[in-house]
Image 1 (tube, helix red, strand yellow):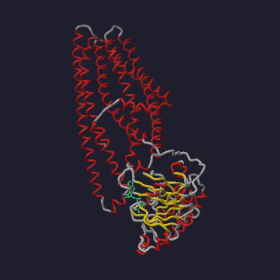
Image 2 (cartoon, protein in one colour):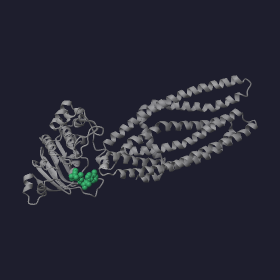
Image 3 (cartoon, protein in one colour):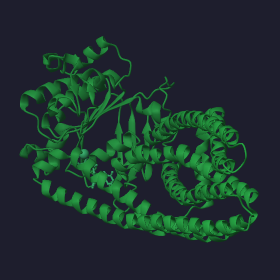
Image 4 (cartoon, protein in one colour):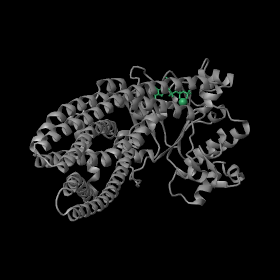
Length: 593
Ligand SMILES: Nc1ncnc2c1ncn2[C@@H]1O[C@H](COP(=O)(O)OP(=O)(O)OP(=O)(O)O)[C@@H](O)[C@H]1O
Ligand SMILES: [Mg+2]
């Protein structure tokens, strides 16, 4: 898909520009500052235009009677304008940076706010690195556009239009002559510039892909090393970055040729105009100072025309970045998910019923993961789900949390269809202790408090005690302030699980979902985790995806899943009575799921 984009090549369509303009709504709150900035920009560009004229006057002044008076007046005016221009430029930059930074922060916030509310199906199809670069890199491109690009564009337009007007006043003949030379150069420059754009997008895409390699391998550094795949990754990265370099070098050649062309065009024009101007001076139709200001205007105009191509490139990039951002912003959010926390009436009490659920992941619609799943779980019951890897156990938890909607069939909570609930309200009644526990970079305290933002220290400690986690936390020198995650200490699987359980305790949900880690715990940790769970499961509906026999024995119902079908159901005693049950054979082999 990316490839196709790059090959389609550059296009600055109206739609693209409209999209970009749409983002200017973020500037609205700062429109006064923005307008002031524009005013300063105009003033500094206009005063810029006065230079060639005044320098010409300076030279002409050398030819009149009272030389020092004429030169002195012009020089003073030049100095005044110089000072004014530097003041204008200062305020222009300050104002524009201010507006751009504030509005881009708002844009970043909006994109992030939207992104985090998107459904799981969106995330399972996207790479984290790619999404990350949307918010960082794409917004940065826009930052450039909102400030420099716009300012440059306006300045160059003022210089081109104002410059030509002033030229006509100085000498109509010479202006016509120059205009006969410049537009052809301009047209070639624009076409050339357009051609160069093709590459900037390709390079951008390739760079993003190479960054993804770095990010993913660093995130999964353990696997990289465990499989001794360092060289494989180094090679993969080398291939990608070499490709980036190749494309960038190719683009660089075009750019170099482009600037060579611009230089040639400008100097060619200068020589031609000088030649014509000298002739005019000879004929007495022009003063030598006028020729100098004429030349300076021509250089200004030529430079601005050359700069327009660069602006075109930047606009192109900005339109691309806008498209990517709008793609995220226009992606439909999860239904009725409110980010603000609130107390909802009518909380779920804990009865769950699956009625003929069928499910396939949206990314793989033809692979049926759950078939005709029907199951009733009464309030306060403990249900264990076991089954071979890939049988659909985790998928059931995904449906319970409404990360995905069933393809057909209905999921009921308290005999009301799940879709009748506010998503946030529903999830606020459930706690998930997932299969892979990820702790956020931060302190242990913050990680536990994630279950109930704003919990007091006493609550956090009580939760940790109930989760059998207090003891090991207290053993750290920094206790609850110990840093975990990327920049902190590494916790063992059992310790991470108990922190996750403490999180769930703090949340105090009506429904507890536990997706047991497949990794075996040592028997001491297992006992601690099991005790913590037993306490947590009291008085609430709990669904435990079990890999350990100890978890299961007392369950009210044991569901044996195979290929997305329930093949056996009942309590321990029921299932053991079966002649050739799957559960019984698991028992006999001492393995589960
Ligand atoms: N996000 C996803 N997108 C597409 N297919 C998926 C996704 N998650 C899981 N699957 C597929 O759905 C099937 C069931 O997966 P699931 O994770 O529910 O298995 P499981 O029973 O939890 O296995 P395990 O015991 O190994 O955790 C598998 O074939 C898996 O490949
Ligand atoms: Mg699983």
